[in-house]
Image (cartoon, helix red, strand yellow):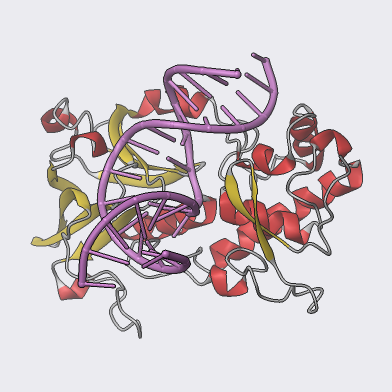
Length: 302
DNA sequence: CACTTGACCTGTCCGC
DNA sequence: TGCGGACAGGTCAAGT
């Protein structure tokens, strides 16, 4: 489910909700969702204060005062939803649609974290729910200093939105995969981090590149355009609060609106925005459902 | 080595 | 209404 813009939207939400709160308890009823839940929990988790919430690729990092961090990957259907038990702290109250997630925990809740906050002698209670219908996601407790050393982090390519990730660096990383098709390379987290199926398709449409094009057949101009369009679409999606197809919600349990701005993703059968006489098609590339306009994204020569 | 396929899970949708 | 199969936004291990 969540790609870089969705995880970033959750991070922004949690950044305004969690820092300063203390972990009171943590319960997990699906072992694989939190495989090291039993180790170190009491010493480094219970009582610890949340310092900050950061993101690398599609992974969220909740940094604690104990020098440990909760490292969370939501995979396809994961959600992190915050609920205050006190109306004075309830986030999103007054939002017209309110939370789109019902009473929690529900049958997809895998981990529940209870939090407390002390303000001027008063104690406020809240909970953070890790829901994950398909159980692919995971949460781990790791020493903060070691987070970036785990295999998953070591394999990641650069952040596409980081200020020092240049057009030249982008081109060079892709050109190393000369015989790979461009869609597979975009999805490969070791080439660049954070792109998934939605924004791969959207950035390729914006760049007028067919997803099956081999990188060796892409001119410098196309790669430079892809760099610009990929960053533009990721920024737009963050601004729109991400894409909600079915499961994705932000930290307040609300959906993102990017999909109503999408040009190809989930728009098969609808007219292309550039060529209203041509319908968006759904094909298969790199083993994934892939959306294209057959007119502006030409099939590469065999 | 580079690329493809199946596995991890649950739920939904579509055709019969 | 039931049942089988395909498919879903991610990643990893195992296969070719």
